[in-house]
Image (cartoon, rainbow, N blue to C red):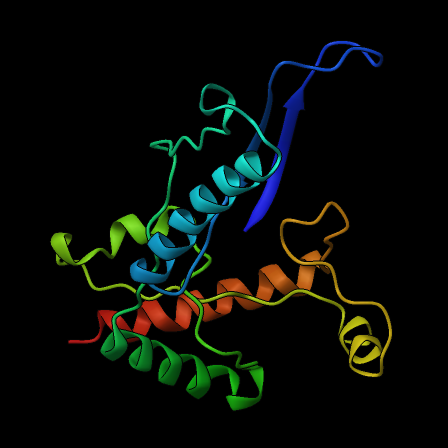
Length: 175
């Protein structure tokens, strides 16, 4: 869960009558995502009740339509794309992490089962290897994609991404 925005009040010395938190909730599957959303609602109400708020002032959790489903790769296609990239760029280009359906933003809509469109989403790294080594040695953590401190090395990232996508497409275009 990420708190991406907090809005409340109009003046530094006046207690606002309302504060809004805008959250992003990501999960590896829809069941866990629903569990997280329900927990947010329970916790918000529970904190309000513990503070002695009357029912009319309890926090309200509003689920907006601005929500993205979990990204689920087609396993067969993902294996084929990985094989094609490895054949062209070598196995050492892969950095494996535990599977995550928490990225990809709107890509999830293209690969939902009701559309019957197989797809696979993968990330192209771009962090300076020295920063990763420093983090592994106990240094500061490497900022993630949604951090204001996120940065990549553009030229090698773009080059690797274009090469990986080209290898995948050429393989998929084979009869």
